[in-house]
Length: 126
Image 1 (cartoon, rainbow, N blue to C red):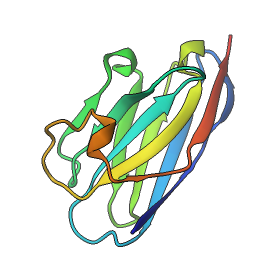
Image 2 (image 1 turned 135 degrees about the horizontal axis):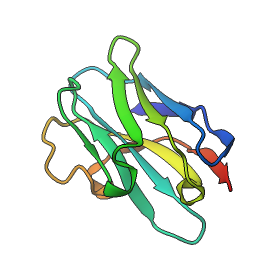
Image 3 (image 1 turned 135 degrees about the vertical axis):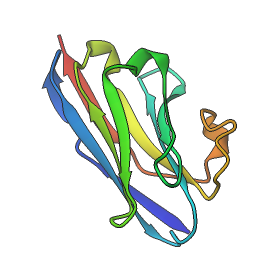
Image 4 (image 1 turned 60 degrees about the vertical axis):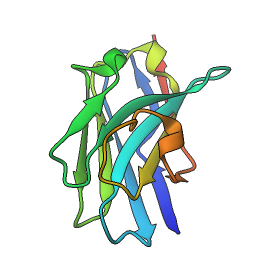
């Protein structure tokens, strides 16, 4: 089993920044893809960003390109989501997810992932 714990959420004004962290523990040996999804009230959980096991490839949803950056520190078993120029429509619960795979095919699909964190709330005021 793998446990994921997100942190860094909060309330921020539009145009501001937040940095989310997700720390992994448990059976984390091997190669893991890590990703962020978000879910706004009454909406489906949507892909935000993903990063390959060694960090050499990333993918971002069109809605966050140019504003968000995903990175990872494998020594600390942590993935980060740097969010800049935040907009009210970025308001959601942000979830960290991971899968013990290297293939990046379908990594924008939430069903690709085996383990999920509890989520952290991000609220952007206008």
